[in-house]
Image: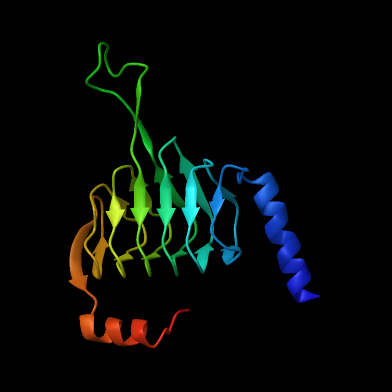
Length: 166
């Protein structure tokens, strides 16, 4: 019964909160634990977990395997052209993709801007604004997000090799 209710909840959220036929669901291993709004240009890996996410714009967003987000994740894939023929910007929009590699954990209230790649195993601290790409295993935070620590490579590799995924 619990499994059935979870399935119905997921189908309800998929239907009424932004998933479209254009989404490329690679598998059924996608968990949504909050209201999500997608743009229809997402690619999902295995074991992706959302606790509330809104994607704005027309750029593609790729979520790798074992992705986890905190509440209120915002991803902006389009921006106004401020170098156009009018001030403060013109009517043209610039679309940029976002790539989130495997085993990434994003904290609560994070904003990710278009053109960013989040490297494998990185962690984004709550409240961060990510405006540039993050290297693998980096731990970043702030506005703009800056690297302040790195995960232990040997420990990460051991967990990954043992398939110790949450």
